[in-house]
Length: 500
Image 1 (cartoon, rainbow, N blue to C red):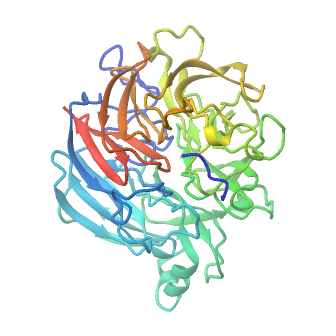
Image 2: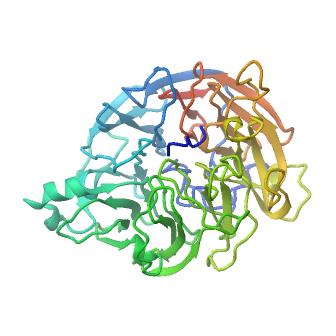
Image 3: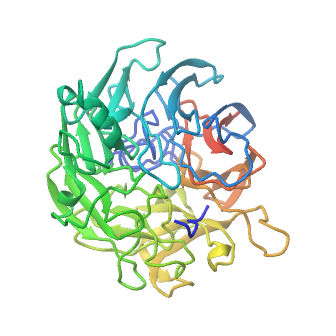
């Protein structure tokens, strides 16, 4: 759904199983891992059937009309427990349903009194699993809840305030609950620590300003304000809603975006992954005009760190609709000092990593390529020929719409379902982070036509598809591959598990 105008280690099981970064067997957070690579550690099962389904929204499930909400990614443990964020009321209340991955049966549920920050499109409720198999999920007042032994029906639980549990207690609790909200998915590092963005809307005893927080594996917290991360630029007031921070492959550097408010300009910043001290920041620019790009709060674009350390982040163009509201995928080296070739699509999307070996027709020199959504919105002046694409981050071509130099298209494939009977347009692709199956040289992606597809990168064809729903205009959703190869995709406010 386009933005409306109202708003490296190798894991080799076979020659095809080339992975481009250290991988765990779990799907631990948005985009699979702390770099948001989208690369699965196991092969996806064939799409023979829907195994089970469960609602992710008790209000919007099977309702007509566009769904202007971002759903949190399901998580999968090494023991095949599936953790599903669920919106439970029109007041934006939530819980986690913890399910048996084999049959979808409920093991238990976890309640939270988390409230989203002020918003237009409803933000993400985004939990994370750590390397120590601890489940973290957002709580009130900028706190996080945790549940150890998430595969079991019972286990140790707790709540942590990154600014201090004692400060959160007593009479202060209501003040924090009313004024501090976690505003991004949680991301975990290799040691058991977590990172997340938070929004502050009023005075509080900790003197917090909107920014990024860390809680280490021992429960110790620290934070940095958005303005401080951007070189003390006092015009900066927030981390864009839903912008999950990303860690460098070595875990030493954390990347996230900051802005002057919804839809305004801002920076991509880096901070020390240990203590959040500032390292670097770069102003995010529209490649066509050289003016500030727009950082919307209605998207879910998050930084992605490539195997070589390069950093990618999606933005909107300066003003609609010079690039047909597609935005740009900006590209930097790991120091943020060098700006590299941008991609021609960035709006509400996080790219996934594709080893170059997965694309037999590729003759270039890049070790890895990028998967990207590649819609061209009819209602924003485009032709409605909505595609998905494999892009070369180190080679360029001239963009057909703007004339800018953009990442070269290695493969593209058109959606299959007409959007109407007259325009020639096809339904949009509705992923914000696709699941990559390196074992079968394929990408798992779902569409607003209600189908999930397997895109075979060797033949550039859809070799499998499965209908999940009748189709719906939907804010973008993630796809996931579970520990046993089961695929997971959200369509019309329902999570579907599919496989053989």
